[in-house]
Image (spheres, rainbow, N blue to C red):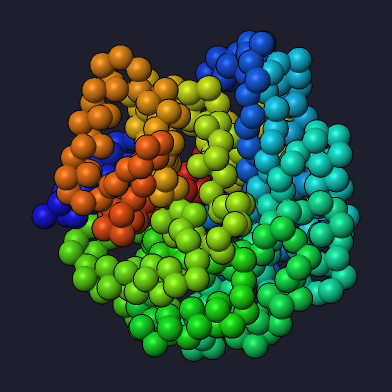
Length: 431
């Protein structure tokens, strides 16, 4: 009962939030960055590289087939956007601490545009942590060496599965198989502070035997970190996946015992050697770098088409089509097309949700975001979660129980489903 209620609530609130986004007042958004003198605020960058060799049918991120000329033009425009933001935060107390390159496949652009940008972030802007996504077929010893020497601290490899059958169903077998994925992971070991392996679960043709093989391979490779993402189709991607797989797992908010069984198996199996960094990400004890920059940083700037930012209470989304992204920056404008000034209550809820997704919440930090009457409401909700067996606490932390981890998994699926639907609406509408 509580599971269905939480999913229905998350589904409704996610839908309502994304449909309240409106065309932005760029003047107000710029003011939020330029007026922050005297602060000592550390933020993150998310940098979207939208190019892939093949467009996978399950992926809802903004991406385009890789063409060298288009990629070079995009990187030039991306630098213009970065420069606009750097101009706004210059002489303020805002400092960029972390940068995450997602996609797409960022490492398609390694020579030299990606390496140049990483070098600028690390040397000139003093960015301390740089994470880069890649695919097994895009790695070779020279590229790994170049990425490591450029200062990349965390490399995330999109393996998705160590089953050749699942890779074939996902449309990835033309580029890598299970053995080449293993070799790619082995090549990276010891070269970076953290090597993460991205996996997918809850696929229609994926059973427990597939998951057992994946986890056993993770153990054999002794990777630093593994992230198991559930498949979260949005309406049109669901249609594509039905053509590909002939069925799609029902129940993003309906009762779905298969989903729960798979999640509990992953959590329990990985728990033998790893500890949860987020509800979906598991790390060796002592590995500090995690997958979700939004957990460590209350604010972040998204660069590139379709990227999201949270800036001093403003939630903003960049234009999605590649041509419009270029047009905005050619005019010297930030490419923001939708925004919303979050109320104090919405911002507090966002920080609570990201804290729960990160499994552990520092008490002092979370109560700081719920002043006055909102603190009473927060304490009531935390007490309810504890009573339901979803939350426990120590002297300075709240932390999710295994039951709570599954409940937050369901909440996050709904939020990602809402975001995926928004991406499709914006791309189809040319927004």
